[in-house]
Image (tube, rainbow, N blue to C red; front, side, top):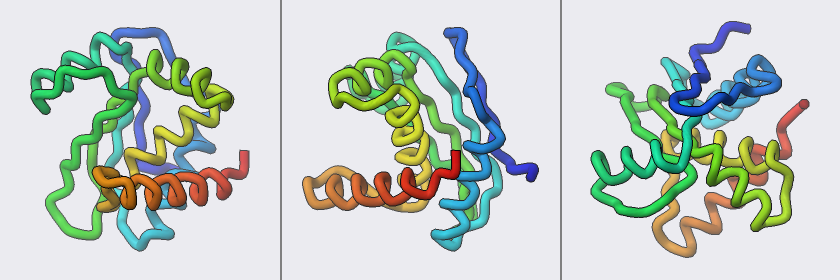
Length: 142
């Protein structure tokens, strides 16, 4: 199944073990939320690279695991760029006592949930986002 989902690495050597299965899973989540996938690009990078994007584009001088840019022009469509720090994902997996792959998948879907319109600025929104992440993770078939 050809989805309009692409995976790149920027300043690090990184590739997904199973990009086709992950693409199918992400596309399924988007479809379940009744949105149309136009195009989604994931860029895996280092803390330094993502920190620079955070400073330049968002004026935030902090480390983060993910930055999502929504490029959709039409409501109900998903089109965006999702930058993910593999350094942060590794550290967060260790901190939370979860596997690297589970944490990576959580972050991958976190970006999609933002593109679907879900926020995580308040404690209530954060709790709702976590439930949506957990629900999405439970739908993996790999």
